[in-house]
Length: 318
Image (tube, rainbow, N blue to C red; front, top):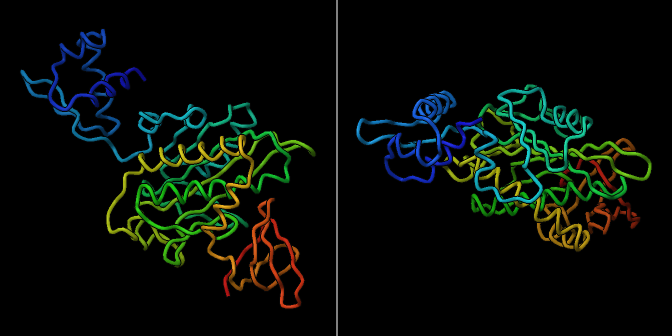
């Protein structure tokens, strides 16, 4: 969209600037400048204009628009392409389709709301319109399918750092994919993959974060940044930090391996050294969560003394 060039120019100016100055700086006609201003207003940008003073950008819309996320983002890999819709059934479905069509690694799909947003084990993810971050990320890691669990933990680590940086909250990881603050669920991660026997074709990482969601719009176990801090948060800035954080850890994984992720996961774990029950298709077991191993698996010591390793499952603290 050509009007983005005009928008980015306005963002650099603190005061009014005349249409003539904009026209000369961007080498655009005055008619084109006027048209761009109208297009931006239709997107929700508040731009005021006064005779003899010119234009001034007053506010930006509270939307996860791709050009807003990409403005000053500075990533090398993630977010170079961002597909945005007001409403989708699920960002996971859109991202999977794009990946099958050959979309490059780092492609992001985001939406203001989802009609069929989903979490692990077929659960639904509440997606209040314009209140959270609902996104899916396409990755094409060069490792075996059995290692994909590492990406869930990696993203969990990145998100805890992001939330501490942007909202000042201490967040814990409830293995394998949930983020909790003050005993309530703040965010979730879902990974789905397309793979052959020995190699991953692509992984879709879905992320849902409750940002400005009212408690009435969340399950009883849920919370949001607004509820925890008492004020609204800038979703675009948090989105940018999510991409920067995941990229930092993803590139580090290629250089240093998975051990730094595991170390951080243990520090942030909500369930280590706690008595838990874990359920999966094989059934349920109870015991003490004693460790997260080098594969990202959870080790549980049952009352009999037997130590069992689980790579996935639904965990409840007892």
